[in-house]
Structures are given as C-alpha cells and as structure tokens.
Amino acid sequence: MHQSALIERLKAKGSPLVLGGDGRCCSPGHTAKYGTYSMMDLESGKILDIQVVQVCQLNIVHEFE
Figure: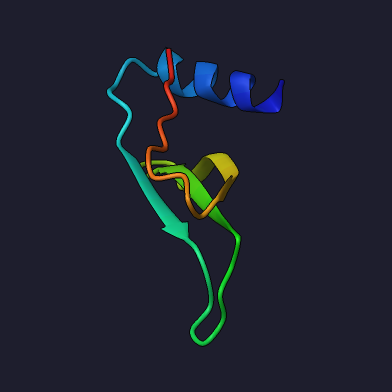
C-alpha cells in the first residue's frame, strides 16, 4: 500500500518520472544464488521498488501504470 501511495503522489505532480535502477548479484569473491534490484525516482530520491531475484533470471521487468 505504501508503494502504491508513493507512486500516486509522484504521478500527481504531473511531471514525468525520472527513474534509475541498479542490481547487485554478489560481493567480490563470493557467489550468490540471489541478487537484488532497486528502482529509484531520481528527482525525489525515493526508492520505489526492491526485488530479490535469482541470479539466473536475466529478464527483470517491472511496470508502473
């Protein structure tokens, strides 16, 4: 609910969202089965989404309406 409310507040401003994302699969010298991917609104500095995914998943798509 918090995520939906945050996205609605950002959309209500009327300006386009400027999004950036980054993923991390493992630390140097370690092998990981899972990784994280985060998406942030670059204008407000708010994190909009964090996903934990298996490293073997290559196609990560998150759609905001």
